[in-house]
Length: 294
Image 1 (tube, helix red, strand yellow):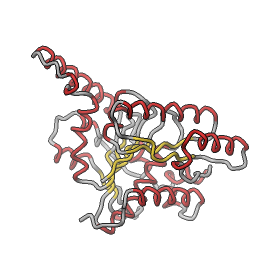
Image 2 (cartoon, rainbow, N blue to C red; image 1 turned 180 degrees about the vertical axis):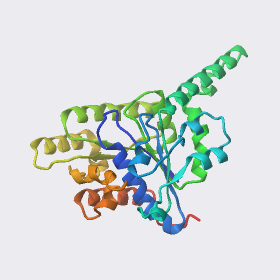
Image 3 (cartoon, one colour; image 1 turned 60 degrees about the vertical axis):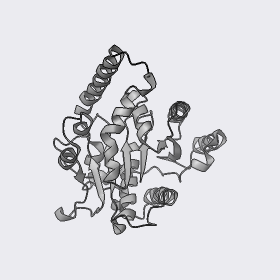
Image 4 (cartoon, rainbow, N blue to C red; image 1 turned 90 degrees about the vertical axis):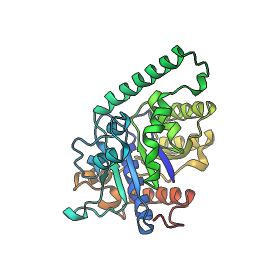
């Protein structure tokens, strides 16, 4: 079982596109052995992952698990969606599930902060001084979503473009990070800062690390593309670099064509081939396809 967060403080770097492609590709590898992959959307700006896959989440939201008001079994049943749309003549996706987000996630995050604050105050008032055992946003996040690891074999976290206490909670939950980035100066600068934030969390005892750096929307004709690739390699990311995802209107067209990923819309497209190489890298690193999951 593994958990990958797809993240970058920079916006517009194809995080959701990468998360859905990874989720679909890993589900395809897991399903024949009875395994299941789950995409958790953690971006309160909208139900991007579900919408990109052509799903209608309605009132389903990850906030209904994070607020702790409903028992886990009921919350999972009411909020986790199958992404398999074969019954409606859509894409066949056995083994792929989505836990959508909505703007109610903002309220859930605020509620978690208040809940932790109340409990910390209660412990202080009781005379406790073992502060390292006090609850945190991270520990509450792991407590609420942790049981999903017993239901699903691989979890992909589609993260918002932030680096706050909630993102630190993601790092406490995830095993490793997938960081998509454009190869322009502004995006690269944000990516370096984001990676440094993960390194800082590691120094504080969190094991999450940058496992894959994914260049996206790449135009190989530009001199800047090669210059940025070389810079990332010099900064120590050579072994973590995934195959570049080429810039193409076909990638952005895919969701509008019946809620498809580029892997489904045009499987032989160079972007599909590059994403499949990333999927194969992840599958190899985590031993997917080497055992039965039933």
